Image 1 (spheres, rainbow, N blue to C red):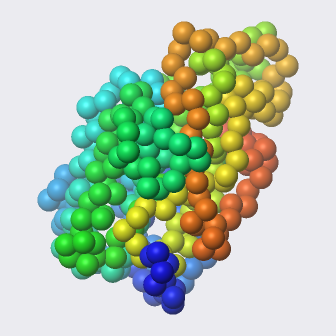
Image 2: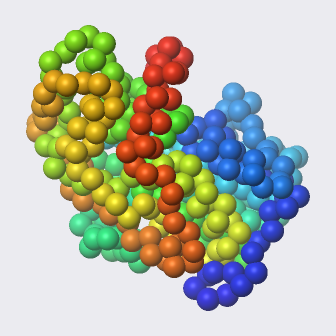
Length: 324
């Protein structure tokens, strides 16, 4: 095993795989992808199990005996939500990670994959960002609480590997998008937020589409189905302490992204940028060379992925509005 990459793949055949957070965008993509593997998929609804509750989480894991765990459960949101609810983002995500990881250890889970986020890296990290940049500088303030919680989760995986020999690994995806995303006025990330604004502008006949920030920051996006495929690849082929970046390797400005979404939605008016709103980190491009050198590459073409995500949003618009 060189640099954590396995000489022989970890076999998922017949394994009981728990996808924690199965109903979210990432979790549902993982369930779809794992459906192509010869394994049994376990899930439990939030109403039946509060992952912030240590005793309840431990009890569920002990009773259901998963062989493999993927932690896709998290409290997520955009800049506005992170700024308004830092305590919730820190507490909820630390508790989810700690409870599942410790319960997995107690239950003798064979393999665990923790999903972090590119926001764990320093605000001024050299681009593209390598995994070794972790904890080398201050975080971006607008999502610091969420980032700290994710760092705690991946460090827990490292600690259980070091102290107990657990095969726990971590993956750090870049910004994600796709079907099943959160469409909520108060907490959405940039792509669903822009899709809602563009769709509303078209329906109302508005002449202007207003976008938060200057439009200049650059972002890297990955389709959630690509992430799910990368997760299965990592479960099979990776067993190392260092987290693994998962990205597309392509970046786009927020201004260009807004133009793409406006075109897909059929909005032909002006796009106006509100530079009184925060931009967040100016640039955040992941160095995913370790994963690519191991043989994995993203497949979804960005514009086509955006169109598919927008079409999903429109098809589910009434349901999305009711749950917002």
